[in-house]
Length: 64
Image 1 (cartoon, rainbow, N blue to C red):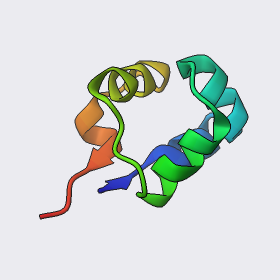
Image 2 (cartoon, one colour; image 1 turned 135 degrees about the vertical axis):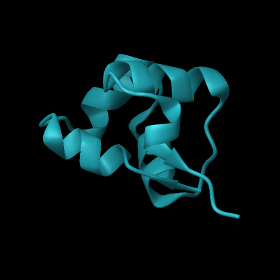
Image 3 (cartoon, rainbow, N blue to C red; image 1 turned 90 degrees about the vertical axis):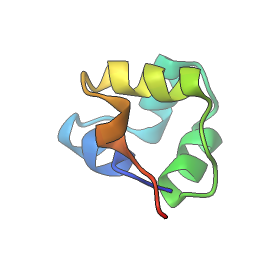
Image 4 (cartoon, rainbow, N blue to C red; image 1 turned 120 degrees about the vertical axis):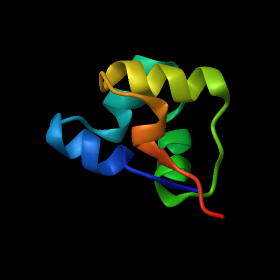
C-alpha cells in the first residue's frame, strides 16, 4: 500500500510528530505508514483523513 501522507504533511507544514499527536499514535507509526510498512486500522485511516480534510481513498492507494 502506498500513501500520500508525506505529501499532505508537507502541504500543511506538519511534522510526523505533529500528525502523530493529532491522531493519537507514536511518531514511529507515521514513519511506518509513510514507508508503506504498516497498514492502518480503519479508525486511524479515518482520523488521518479527517486531519487533512479529505477521504481515506485519496490518502491510501492500495496496490493489486
